[in-house]
Length: 161
Image (cartoon, rainbow, N blue to C red):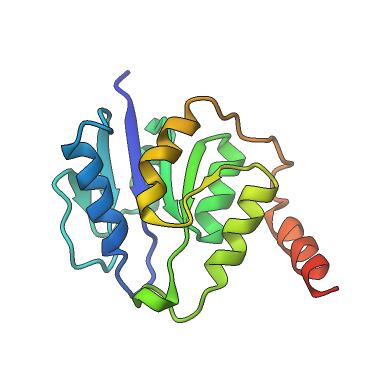
């Protein structure tokens, strides 16, 4: 089976062009050798790899199951699916300062991923190449299915103390 990196940006109505451009740059430099498929949502940048704006649930699940690596925005749904499937993931939070989201809640979700060792987090898109190298030696921590909401609630409660 060919190796596949699945880049998924969700359905949020703002772009995440920064991430798509970085993926293209890493492919150009030979840092990414795997086949790449991008689900780009509302992004205006069109990647050089195969892409679709949106996927049906069946198409999404098929790409997810085929993927060796998932690069995703810090969306709770994608994080939960990757966790449940034991997928190696790199989470890159959308940032309000770049017009990629209306607030910075994805920073908090990414922090949970990092602290609980569910995946790796690239806090800046320029860290993506380094994180792809680290991912070769990373094994996601197994967390009971359906526990992402519990983990988030516990994290938020600890942060508020």
